[in-house]
Structure formats: C-alpha cells, structure tokens
Length: 318
Image 1 (tube, one colour):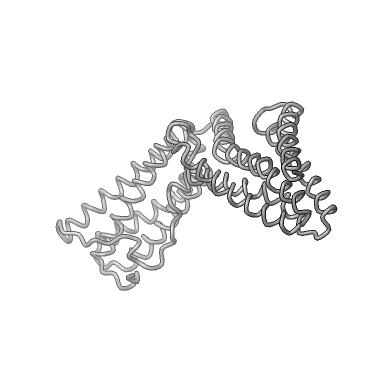
Image 2 (cartoon, one colour):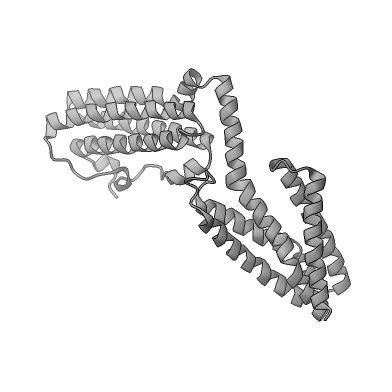
C-alpha cells in the first residue's frame, strides 16, 4: 500500500475522483434500499448522491485540464491510513440509523482527506478546488441529520420507526424465535431419551451437545436457503441463517448444561426447570413481538414441548 505523503498531485486528484465515484455509488445503493420502507430518507441519500456526482465532475475537469485524459488506477484501498469500511450489505441490514451513521463517517473521512490533499498540492486551481471541497464536506459531515430535519417530519419519523421495528421482527426476531423454538423443543427427545436409557449424566450431556450443534447447523442452513430476502423483505440470508443457527444451538444447550451435574436425579430436575423457563421465554417473545396472546402462545408451546419430552422419556425407558 502507498503512503499518502508519497502520492503525487496527479495521484491525489485521481484518488479523489475514485472516492467520489465510490461514495456516490454507495449513496445511490442506500437510496434504492430505503426507497420502499423509508421513502423520505431515500430522498436524503439521493440528494447526497447528486452532490457527490457534482464533486466528481469538478475534480475531473481540473484533472483533465492539468494531466489530460489518462488517469492512474488508484483507489482508497491502495493507500494506507483510510478506515476500513463495513460491507455495504451489512450496513444496510443493520438498519436505517446505521446507514445514516455510515454516511456521516464517510463524509468526515472525505473532509479530512481533502484538507490534507489541499495542503499537499502546489498548483493554485487544484489547491483551491480541494480546499473548497474540504469546506463542503465539512458541511456534509452532518448531511444525514441535517437533511433529515428538512425532509423527514415527525409523522414520517414515526412511520419509519414502525417500519424499522417490522423489519427487525422479520430479519432478527422471527428467525431467532424459530431457532429457539426448534432448539428448545426438538432436542428434548434425544437428551432425555439418552438420560433415562443410561442414567448417566455425562452420556446425556454428550448427546445433548451433539443434538444442539447438529440442529443449529441444520436450521441455520435451512433458514439461509429458504429465500434471499429480495421479495419478502426478510433481510440478508446470511444474517438470518446465523441468527437462527445460533439461537437453535442455544435453545438446545440451555437444558443440556444441567447434565454436567454428576448426580443424575438432580441433573434431570434442574434440566426440567430450565426447559420450563425456556418455554415461558418463548411464549413471552411470541406475545411481545408476534402479537400472539400470551396464554395461547404458552399453551401451544407447552403442549408441543410436553409431548416431545414424554416421547424422550418413553423411548429412553424401553
């Protein structure tokens, strides 16, 4: 990687053009991503994209005037000192506030670059342009919040907040809840079957770990491959798969850990208590986020868990 202090004026201008192209493309992708659920905020980033395009045009005019049409291939990844940015898809899946924060960080970094670049340039027109852009980027550093004040009123903020909550449920809560339910319920049978078949806490623990990890891997892949989220709005499949897989594993591990207790009867008693707490937690989550009446949710979960629990004891006692 090159150091900034070793760049020539030609490379500095080429790097500035490259940065404005990348930032403009990023803001365009943000605007497109937000258009459906957050139309007012989408306009913010569409405006920012237009501003970056204007910066790029002015930089290109100055570059062609000084160095002609040939441009060295240089990007921010080729120069040390720049902050490594989070992948755009990850920022977008993290929510609208994360997108606005990313925009502010981008503008601040670009402003710092222009300030240092202006100090390095000796040609009058290039130095003036870089200095002007540094001042504009300083104003743009708070562009997301400033433009929000202009274009996003309180009613729109409320609508966007509700939409963000719905997306959170679709992208995080729902796959996490599916995983927790599967891990808490489906692993009951093999764990308690092994426990009552062997009357050995450690053997039950080994079976429980295997069941929890296996279920987590299976559910993670199943959720990730169910759809790509482009039509359903359920978010990036990788994130959903990871959330679902981890929660499935966690659901199985919670009532597996008590079997580290060497006394078999005590271990079973503690495990049963943990299972009851898991079922209550699942019922409350469905009540809180899925608009399911608590008693109905509890009845559905408890009945299912109880049947699987009985199946485990039955097969373990054969």
